[in-house]
Length: 410
Image 1 (spheres, rainbow, N blue to C red):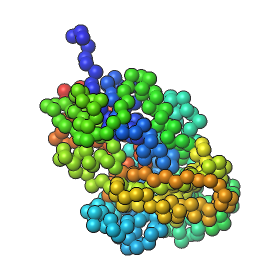
Image 2: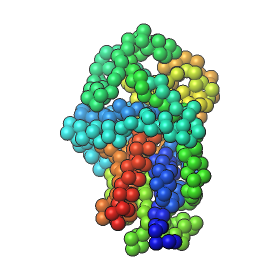
Image 3: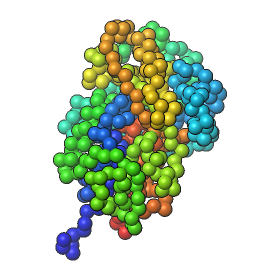
Image 4: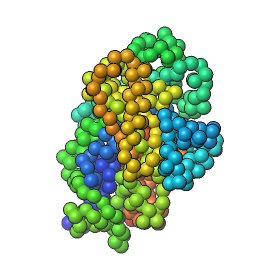
């Protein structure tokens, strides 16, 4: 190596979902020597079941003023869109208390500002990324339609819509005639709508991540499938314990993007995140993509309908029940029933069910950046159900900060 050359910065990214794969690809573009590490193939975890929504107006956090009144329903109503089984309450109590505290107006305002900053220009970024990866057909920009049964139901969501308007997002209020003009197959139960015309959808999140991973690999990036037992600091460098393929490897930097499993890696290093699994479910009706022509949200049920490449995906609800409990078939059956009530013709359509662990922080704001007091250690987690949308901006933020730190000799 000549005196005019610098050794490429060696980085390991732990977690090959949409967040980790985006970070690996971005760092690779900046000239880093990047290893992407996951126990499964890229995109096979939480990203696989994503509803594909690119919705930059989603600035309202999950915890909004008045959430305390909904806690009894979360615990007692097994069909609540946000459900916490009583048996898991003792484990979830610290997170739940923080969640309720995060509903204070000042905290909500701060969270909305941070989310808006992370969402900035994400529509253009994802459209450009789809073109760069050679999969432009995955980007569908036909807007998002939010539906309500009546004026009272729409009024109950007024805070969220006011937040959207405060950040400059334009939405069109629709009556039933307007709904029929966009999505005529919707049940007559829904009489009011809010249409965000510029929002978009990724029609196959798994294929999107896979395309990123192929591009990363073709550009010299390394993908390793292995379990990670721990991260260990060795001087100013990092060692991945448990991955035999990397037994002799030291990295200048490590990025923890392991979703809901990030806490287990970071806690032994003294960085404790109040991270919970926001267990999400979807039901995929195969061959029924034509039911909707864009992302449709039943706002009263908190359920998303998405026209995916291989059928209609019905996703949503939040279940706080930890990482180890098996999937709850009741949660998926609720989604299937809601789908059949909202749209005719789904009764005899074959379907499959999925459950994944979305990493959720009490204030809904992901943690993206350095770990205090740990040189060379970075974190990108807590994106909840907005990981796909915020993946590219998260990658850009990590890359910019890392190379700035590198230039400063850190």
